Each structure stands twice: as C-alpha cells, then as structure tokens.
Length: 146
Figure 1 (spheres, one colour):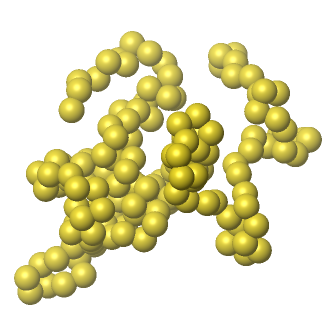
Figure 2 (cartoon, rainbow, N blue to C red; figure 1 turned 30 degrees about the vertical axis):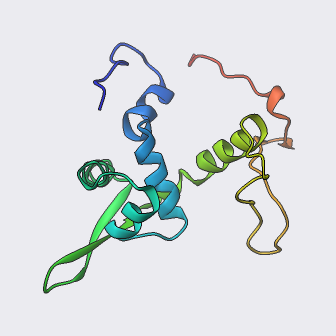
C-alpha cells in the first residue's frame, strides 16, 4: 500500500482515502453491502490473493468499517459484518456505480440497477438542501470552513 501523501492537507476527502482509497477495500465493502460475509466469499468474488485480502480485511476491521465476528468455535471461523460506519459508504458506492454507468459504461448495459426496496422503483442519491429539498448537483458549492 502507498504511504500517506496527504499529511499537510486539511481535507475530508484525503482522510477518507486513507481508510477506503485502495481499490480492494471498496470492492470488499461493495461485496459486504451485497451480503457477502466470509473470507472465502470475498476471495471467490474478487479473485484477489489471499494475503492481500487478509490485509485489507484486517485494515477495514481496524478502521471500524467491518466487525470480525466468530461464527464457529472448533475450528474458529469468522465472518465480516459491516458496521454503521461501513454501511454509511452505501451512497458513496452507489454514486460511483452511477458515475461508472454514465461515463464508463458496459457495452451490454448496466450490470446492476439501483431501486427503492419498498416500492421497487429506480432511485439515485441526490443532494438535499435542508430548506428546499432535493437540488440539482450543479447547485452545490463547497466552501472552506469559516
């Protein structure tokens, strides 16, 4: 893994990259959001070397994204469960999915669809103003802390 390159930056994006900026980490979170919990499920889905997967899972546990939970005692076996902090990455990954479908599309069309679990209709994540409701993404500005 690369060393820190953001030490002198006061930036929430840089701090986030320190936790989930490595590609295997986000793909593990993606798989966990889709219900995978066991090492072999992640390894089979991702095709990543076992030592790399082990390192990434350990880092995600250390960073509070996953909990390592024993599900069998003899021999000891563990599964990885998303924490609230990990589940809070869902809109980030869905936004990345939408960006990829639009800017780097699969020739056969989107491999996944995002829908509202309650009614089954397509959905997206949009910025929301606490006063006005949903707003267009171009109506958002990011300002330095005052």
